Length: 150
Image 1 (cartoon, rainbow, N blue to C red):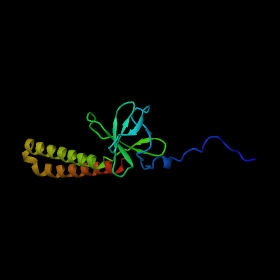
Image 2: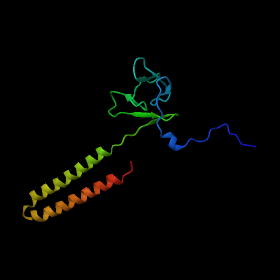
Image 3: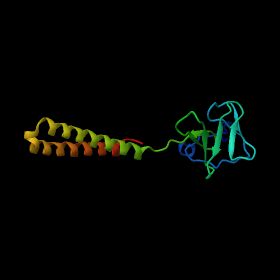
Image 4: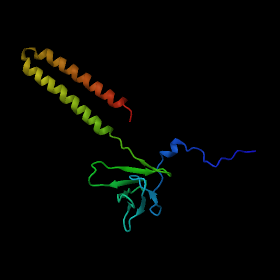
């Protein structure tokens, strides 16, 4: 006799990360308050929540919704995986890499400038030390940025 369970098999984790197309005619749960329903706002490409009154714009690819909020400085973007909304985390690698390299160069140049001003008689030795410190700093920042987890 075959065993039949009333429960569905557990969903695969990989299927939870795949974006499903958003259909404007469907009603979805609100990703912010989790209590209201998202309904299409007439004559727009946007959804509105029936409970918290947030407005969400549908992206042109119809795979994501973006929260339209004036008071929040960062965009919140979700995708629908067929069961729930999943917050889309955007990569900030380019910004953090630029910031890390800028800070490391700035610190190395500031130390070198102060060293030349304070110890002018030992400028030759100090310049080699500055170049070595600059290269080691750049190497460490590059290693940290490349080896960190996304």
